[in-house]
Length: 428
Image (tube, helix red, strand yellow):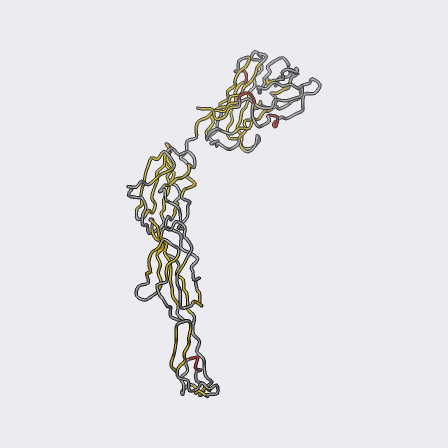
């Protein structure tokens, strides 16, 4: 049993007046009819409760002639909320003078650290009265009420603070709550590093996994869910929420082909809690921002370089450009490379891509396309034969149409085009 909460000396955040029923002291006459005191508290740790100790001052011995049961309860939500624990004690068992009146409590609920609860102390109805007091001390008299009330019997002060005004009430109960640490398996580990994500480009240069205790764990078991072909325990009995793969560790990742999946199981004497599966990809991010831009349709036949933007965690780039039997151009640490073809064919689409690479593996890039300019042929004047195809639709002279010669091009047999230092020609 340990102290779950203590409020010695009446220091606390919750006024004990909230549960008062009745009126203030009026003209020296006792008019209270059901006096209660409440105290807000937050457990120092998750616990089940065994008892509460209440500081009282007994100034007059009642000689055992006035029985009366004091009740202590613990509520959640508010002083009048759900009752989690309750217990009673005979007030006559307390000795004269100062004493801590201990009340054993019955209940089984777990009180959680960080949550707010309330201790409420009261006597059964008909067993409470207020009595006259002086300017130095004020007392609540807890006594067994009979037909004739003797104001000189037991007085109790459920508070350790002196009252300085005749009409003031005690600010706080002075209590200590006792209990035992709650027996429960630990909560799941949380907040993994690297962050849970399947997107490549994660920095894993320190080869370290870490996490946070979700609550109640004594040790941790690190488990590989899918780790480059391995599934199973990586390390067990870890006392710190971190693990680093050493340079000779056989599970130190290198050249992986898929995202790495892992979890942390939390362990204490009450059991093991299986953690969530997390994942990350230390391979570099996918390359973006091609130059020429994807789907370019007006590329000239001369192209000096191919370029792209830097990809996170990439060390090198592998470039592929359609050029026949072998599309591989080469590998570079830069973000550009010379175009492998000196002169591109006109009106031709060229697919290309860039894969990013580092020690952990390669991320395949998107396939981009650039298309060179087309050369438009001049068309002579013609007339169709019985609905035949036009020249630009692939029609055959003499079968689909015949040249009319109206634009003086009927006898042209060779067309020549000049661009830069290149010459194209075609036969009709």
